[in-house]
Image 1: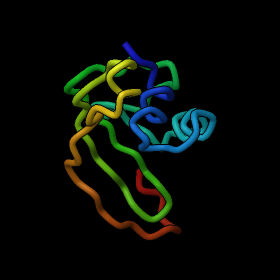
Image 2: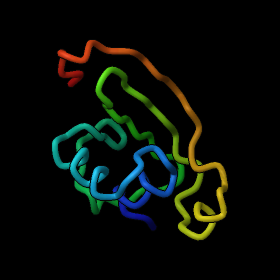
Image 3: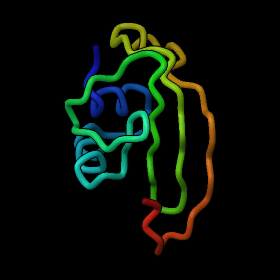
Length: 91
């Protein structure tokens, strides 16, 4: 099982692990509809929502195996992407 911060980096949803940790800590990342900690375990089938400045992305986890992710296996399936006003807090 992978930690949330590591999954976000390996899946390239967020470029750096430190940034992934910060985004999780400020509540910009949700797993299955709930806020989580950077150490939250990510499993195949989980739904992850990420609030970037200006947009919200919702993905379904396909693989949570570190070795496969490092071999560039498809990490997630895009479910939804919507633009939001940068000034608004999405949730």
